[in-house]
Length: 453
Image 1: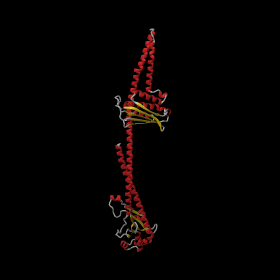
Image 2: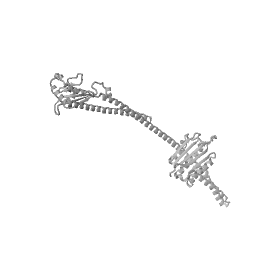
Image 3: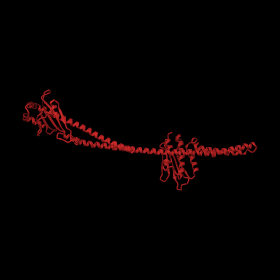
Image 4: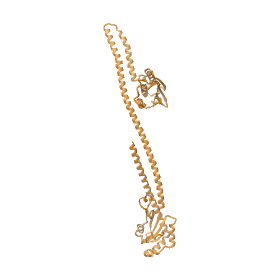
């Protein structure tokens, strides 16, 4: 069980760790897609706004700048009104810079003050734009990416290349490049990722703790069930031994009673009959026949005694309560040192017929067990009805006198093994049995049955 618990704990921890990693990867993938889409949409909107507002001026500028050579392109500048408009589009926005390229890849205009390369004809974005396609690219560098590679100035910047033409189907005159810095969104994503990781780890840790609690509870339940099964097996083993021993003792007692009692009585009757027949044949007095009657009465009494010990006939003829009263009187007669305190507060009709023999056998077994193994001078016996349940309570009171030498020690110190036969009989008859070892040394037995017939 310990190995299983350890295996389950390690497996659960690995699964939870993998689940947290998968959630992180999924969240990062969704975040990258969202930032990429947002940046593309923003750059495309800026480019369309710029081209719609200053498109004719840019078209005229690129028509005059294209094919004039790099020196002339560098010397020609946009009008101050258009340049100012483009500069304003980068102020107080996430747009970092705007560049305008001629058809040969030269930079015709840039909102950046730093020097830029004059030839960009080999850039993939420029080439795509010259084919009339909008091209966007971004190097996403978040907290996890920075752990595996060094950062550079172009990280988290979306570059969008938009073709510039005079109208649909017209040749491309130049390229409009928009650069947007998405670092603030990436940083916010990193913070959210940290909170997400912390929250998911906390939730998964709580789930792991709950799983461990459930497993430990299940282990305790299984341990309790195993303990109950072991106790039940031990009780059944003791009960089996006791039943075998009791059965053999009962057979021996019946054989002894038949051989020493009834057989001797029948032999005496046989001898008296033979003597009477012989005396009659000789013409002598047949008075010996009169002595046969007491012998026959003794034989009848012995047969009834054996039959009563096997099963009292009063149980079927009179009922359980008269049989219990008779048994208590007989028990006190056989054990004069023990008094029985009886409390019976139910009627014969309330006792189901199938329970009568079980209740009688439990009382008989409990009384004999207490007389044999307990140093007691009083047995309390209660049989009453409460809450539609028949309750049987049997308890002994330890005596202050020294224990008699005939008292035999119990087979087992635990009452549940000492009274295993009564417990099994109660369970098989549909009842509930319990035994309690009192502080003063006495034992209290309780058995309950539903009174439904």
